[in-house]
Image 1 (cartoon, rainbow, N blue to C red):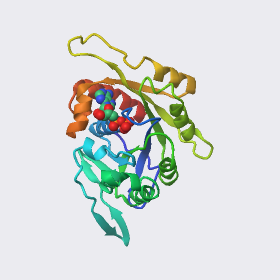
Image 2 (cartoon, protein in one colour):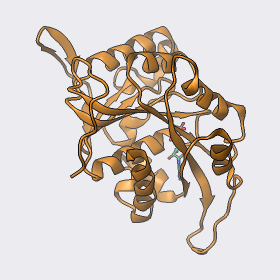
Image 3 (cartoon, protein in one colour):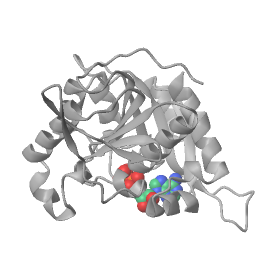
Length: 266
Ligand code: ADP
């Protein structure tokens, strides 16, 4: 069994969190939430205690990824302080802004209120001791990022990009945000998602639909570790739709994520 990492962050109800990893992307739709869910499940299956804080106020998708959309967090009073209980998502502790807002509310909640709700989630969630807390950030850079970075002791950042997005300035801005003065969060690495497509009929072929090698080159140029690439796989999309991340069901996807997770754990 893996050893628990030393506690870096000690909030009232966390009971100690080893590493807090922020998962970020320059733009939406690149698979940031999908990568968060699959990486979390992989770490869980490796024996770590894992939590996910879904802070993507624009489109919280973790409840659906794990099939716990209907969950209503219970509140409890412990030692005179209010705390909220995360959902159990395949052995992962999950707290999502999606438990507090309806899709139709999203526009109104996005700014001040969402940040308030997020702050409550950050300070009141009863994690109960974790080796890894993965934070699914909104795409881009903004107020939520600052709230998470300043109020949760983020120990590292993972950047997700597609091949065609990696050359775009907002991926660079993401890296710069974490490296900014007074923030100085180490970038654990970059993951290239939707890196290629292999049709069933041609299992030897890789089609680099969105370009090839961009994230690796970006990683080298920016002194960021390259964590690996994930192709476009039907089971990954199906897994998100069905509430069972593919890293737990498809051996090919599992082994890709395992090699990424091993680099993250290092
Ligand atoms: P983001 O969080 O960056 O907005 P999502 O994780 O919601 O992006 O992914 C966007 C869509 O792409 C979802 O429908 C998801 O299932 C799909 N997707 C993400 N990564 C892959 C992949 N490697 N293969 C197939 N589909 C993927």
